[in-house]
Length: 418
Ligand SMILES: Cc1cc2nc3c(=O)[nH]c(=O)nc-3n(C[C@H](O)[C@H](O)[C@H](O)COP(=O)(O)O)c2cc1C
Ligand SMILES: O=C(O)C(=O)c1ccccc1
Image (cartoon, rainbow, N blue to C red):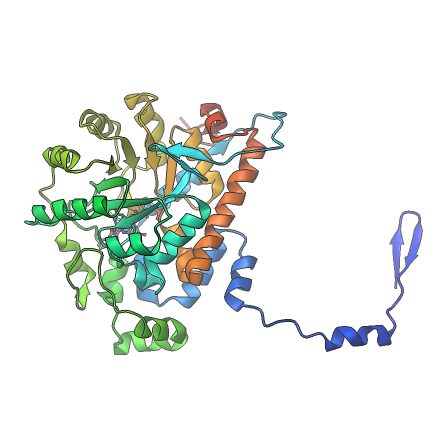
């Protein structure tokens, strides 16, 4: 074959068939299909598509969905996409350091794994997979009160991962909250996140429509779905039944019933006794306005966690990224701010840091990885985000997380029309 080039042509020799023979004898080792699929995924969106293919509709929708109109989850994403990243060029970014410090300890990335309930329903590897992947990446992992691995087992199995514990309190069961706090303390969790945006459960319409129950059940309705995803069901039915970090049992309850367990009477007065009961760092998760941010600081928390629960609670709630600059102004430069809701890329993380956050968390992004490929899937998500953060830092012209400042992002890529 002759290829035209500027200087003339290059004659390409066709190979002698005899030389091809050794190639034909070569048998590639059987590739691990999951790993190959994960490797081909370029971003978290690709990982989500794999997750959707291999996970039954009900658990996928529980994870992917949000409250009511789901508009809050869309706004969370839109705010990140509308943010503009503003480079400072010619800064010698030959070496960049993605690590930072949060609540007194180093984290290799400005990012942690957010607490999620029912994690062994997304994939049988569940919380242990998330915590192991976090440990390998050198970032913190938060266990939910509604997790499906006990406080003690997680600590025992994954002792080297930095562990945070997220607290939900139950109606009429305040003493149980105290017991959980004591257990988390005894098991070496260093930070307590008290979730404040869950006075009651959000209304998740996808769960209602799917007739979702905990645990998922094989009904005529789910059988067809199961025929497309037999691997998930085999896995689910042959591994340890769902037990909870803290609940005694759950047997076929609908999401609507489960959402009734939350304690609507939880108030600011409770933060004071929790502060007394807990020796480690204390964080209120689910702060959504500058006013509440100031109030939280006044009660003596160690950090604020700005979150609308990924749009899963109050529909049309404020978008954390959009509130962030005003919250930062309200509380001053010293109070650490952790932010989540809508983060799916390294660029999202950098935008949050530039606009005033110190640290970020991911919920769905890591769960897509978990559904797509267990621990390997979470590791792939963290690797994708790590690479995006590193490339993003170089292109922004910063060598360290501390160098990221307000000059590096604007909330809207063009001024909103007047
Ligand atoms: C499936 C799922 C379960 C969750 N369970 C909890 C929980 O038990 N406790 C809690 O405080 N937040 C929970 N969250 C909220 C996350 O901690 C986090 O705030 C949210 O996922 C962030 O938004 P993102 O998914 O867009 O990253 C859950 C989120 C998801 C997606
Ligand atoms: O789904 C959630 O967002 C959540 O916080 C939760 C977790 C477990 C049970 C109920 C709600």
